[in-house]
Length: 105
Length: 105
Image (cartoon, rainbow over all chains, first blue to last red; front, side, top):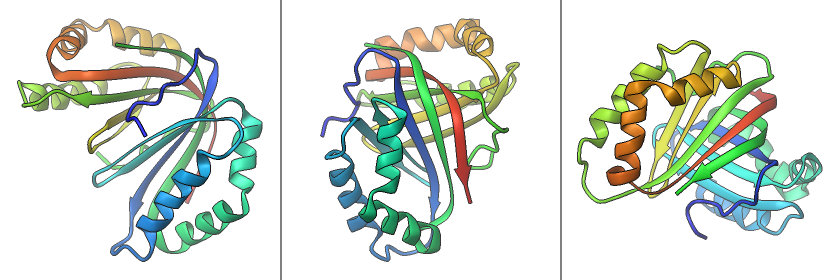
């Protein structure tokens, strides 16, 4: 997976997921890898970018809001969200946004 | 600065800045701290979240597009953008998006 997602010309959508982790792995690393693998198989998926220091930021890109809704409702992903709330994340925020403009080098 | 930005009820705007760095610091660390300090003083600024591993992600939040435009045109920030393109960033992408919905714990 390349680092900066090769997204198409806007508009498209970004899900900005910010979190702080609890102590210990508790199966988190394996789940995180699996969720990236699974997200990439979803309809409407455009890319994913991720970095973690004290704060973790994962941004996934999607063609439309329905694709985001479907991904949120994916059975395996629902299970991960549940364990995330209970065990992995001390705090988190999800922001769903529409990318209107982009540029880079 | 708290880790997850305490943003207001949507809509608001997010600037997603993704980058990979060149080798060496070359004044980058000092500039990065200064830019956070300076951004926080701008009109319309709501918060900033940042993490870097191999990939760096910084998301800043703003009340409106004009505030983002003004921040982009800030003289000291323009100088940092110029040096960023020339020296600090191997690759980068800026995405300007409108946050339509958010939730968290």
